[in-house]
Image 1: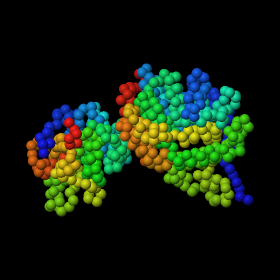
Image 2: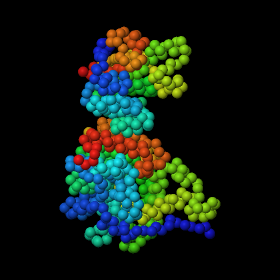
Image 3: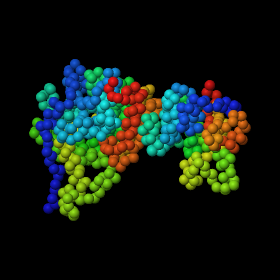
Image 4: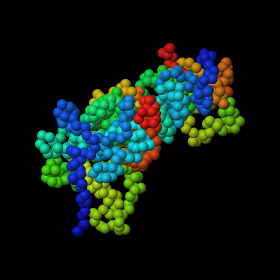
Length: 401
Length: 222
């Protein structure tokens, strides 16, 4: 009989994670019934909370704040060890002392998105009406909803204008939404490896991931917490499929080729003979440790619904009309999830609006994930763009004044 | 041909602040009114844009080569990767005070369409190009019997990106054909210095290594 091995069960830090959902180790801004978050689906979400991390100091003029918008499966732990996994922050090569997002010069804020599972209100949070996790009773949120919540956080922090909004992938979508919804509050913007709308192919990949989760019998219509289970297999498969889309053919070939995992000959089974299989299984199972399956459903849905032009009579340039924000758009040659053509369409719309825009396509074989990796050209461009914007903004070079 | 008489010598200030700038760049920068908004099409490494921004001009650029774009962006310039032949159509009318095409016209597939687009997007256009009527060019073809190559245009005929060379005379004829007004015209010698002010066109066409033209729409510009 052929040996069958599925994705290994993960060591799930269930306690740490459930702690982070309602009582995160990050700073938390709580909004009561008097300050509901008006969602695109028509629901007023209240009460709700936003968990966020900050780095550096806000200057006296309150003019040096940079908002980082995180991607689908990232969170607010940009440049500190992750409270659940203990791993380094996801952008430690970009954010820090002397790095492009220099914490000696800028005040950096990264909130967990609404719908997330690291402390901002989402489907894993406790529904105050029932005392149980929201699950699928949580209203469907959109990218504009996330940004609206972030704007409320900034109001709470007393920050009127952001020096810059930065983010890649789903974070880039939020950056663009910021410039469209609050153009006067965004001095500069760096949307990276993103698009003004989610493509049919990307929606298709998301649907694959959602179906994998919902097909897991442990999902229990999203009520897995009450059943004492977790749809870890479904979530792991969703992650494995998505992870392929974050890489590239060349990157996978360079990293793994057809090499075998701890063996010289095929086992004639469905065991993970190939290194690439082993790697994917690891990616799937480690993801399950730190991420909530329902949250994955909601956040992928938010990306699917994103379409700036549709909200502006089908004309993208209309969305950016008269905008004063300085843009730096970056794409990567081997990114097939958010290909350069999507960034180019954005740049054309910005040109048509006479916006001040820089656009660089960076050559790399590392795929969509390049914006998270060590790509020196990306760091150089980010640093130079921020420095020239800081000069235009009158920010002193020597940190908070 | 009244454009010739409007040529003004470079101001001493212009020479001073751009000690390392190219002669044609200084001349172009001199033609741009302070405080205006400029698009540099084919901006290369961004040297001209930097010169302009240093003078308080709001500059943007388009550059075909990815390396050039990334170098510009790394200098803090607002430059996008794009193609003069295909991407100018995406810019709205009157988006800029000046659109500059510096040493790029000869590398476009549709020079006439590009020139028309320059003057649609910008109220004025500044175009500089190598003059193929320059005496050294003529001599190489006449005596040497081979396609001309110079220090500024070192590529061989089979690997040059320059597919539409023209002479100053050719360019003037194109401007007249598409009803473009020449506000200023300057020919630069081998050292990037403007040629003497009063000279007949044939002299410029023979002794100018490059031509630099400030253009506007006939009948519309003030």
